[in-house]
Length: 242
Image (cartoon, rainbow, N blue to C red; front, side, top):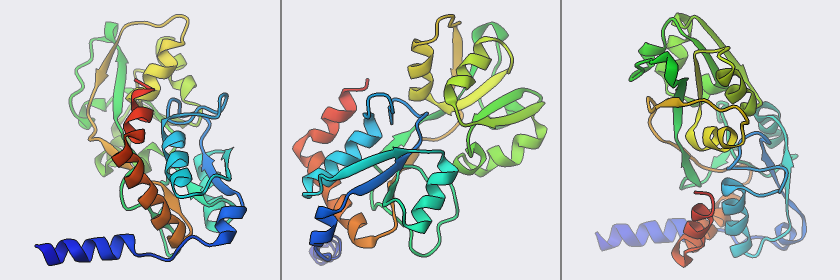
């Protein structure tokens, strides 16, 4: 057992040092602008963004730039080397893409319906014959039964702007929206004509690592993430958004 632990520590913590170039050039993070409270473009803050920045700063990397774009474009930019870190990745990962060893946090995707509709939704199958509005690339991020079940929905669309999901639900234009619970509450709390809803937790928690196109930077980030957790900074960031 002690030998296994020693091997783990050796493999995980002994990695090439971050070069002086990394410390001088900006580290570019690509993020969607429509996933508050994980990323908040207006204030350049957010849970996910703040955790990643804190972990990098802990390792001496404080020249950090966050740029905002769609998930699809962000994936392309990561592959082309125009950005260094991607918050969320739905594509098929090939050679040269390195997810962090541990998740930055977990999303909690849910189905949301208006309470007045009195829907019973305890499984994905119970979305059948309902109009459903998902977030961009929901069929890639959510468990496979969701993508397989889309054909049985009365209608199915995906949108980039998740504020629009809340708006269309409150206007009774769709039966159900699919999104992360924190994102729903963020937009719903700011919605002028919000109606009572039912939240249906039909999906498992979804761990979200960060994605890199450089293995050295990925290992450096993982060390920083472990350190901010040990120091209590991680929980401090999480607690600030509840």
